[in-house]
Image (cartoon, rainbow, N blue to C red; front, top):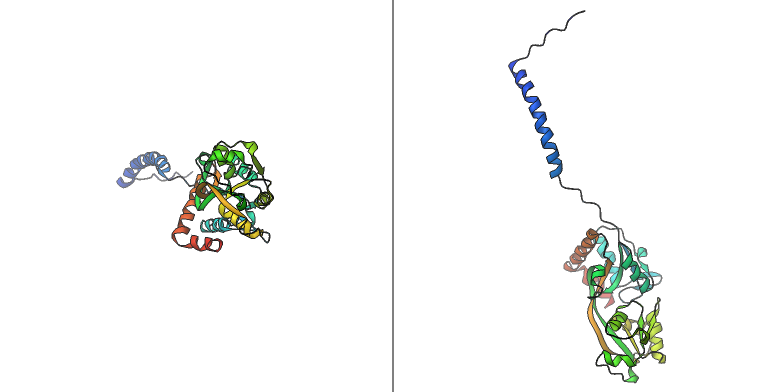
Length: 272
């Protein structure tokens, strides 16, 4: 059996053989440090779900399609974020139901929502969408004058369940049994009909929405008047407080960009 010839190492080979274990040890120390220093990969944004009510001109249905200032603005916000939201994915239904979804279910949002101190801790907010006024409406020929909440205690007041008008009244000390509480898709028209027929004395709701419904449902233009301002505020998209913060932040950034580049003004113009 032939023996392998002996390996003759040059001085360079011997030096490399001595250094190699040292290099391996250094790499063993450096690799964990490099891995720890590497930035963590950002998880993808979670998808938000949106619910709304019939609240024209902000959100409503026309020819079976959900439209309105806040709807068109939301679609533009999501498009600007490269998020795949379609108009038909926005669910329109009774306010009370949508409000409960947003309160209790992560990544659920409700709009258009008046931002108040009472509501503040229950949601994450994106906006504002628009200015808003919450008013009390009466028949003009009743000549009702309101100076304070104490004056309201003698009247039967129509409200929408969980709506800002109802919440403002009860927070101001108006007993729930003084309220004619309704819920449903055509609640504003129903309440205005009750007001017209004298079944309620006042109706608490968003002033612009009331005026839109008066025109759309052909009530006489001079039949009603606004007799008291309950609140002046702003409308927002209100999302469950446990919703993905990255998605909320991206929405707000997108809305701010639309306002800065002039697209916001173009979107809301047809509804003003």
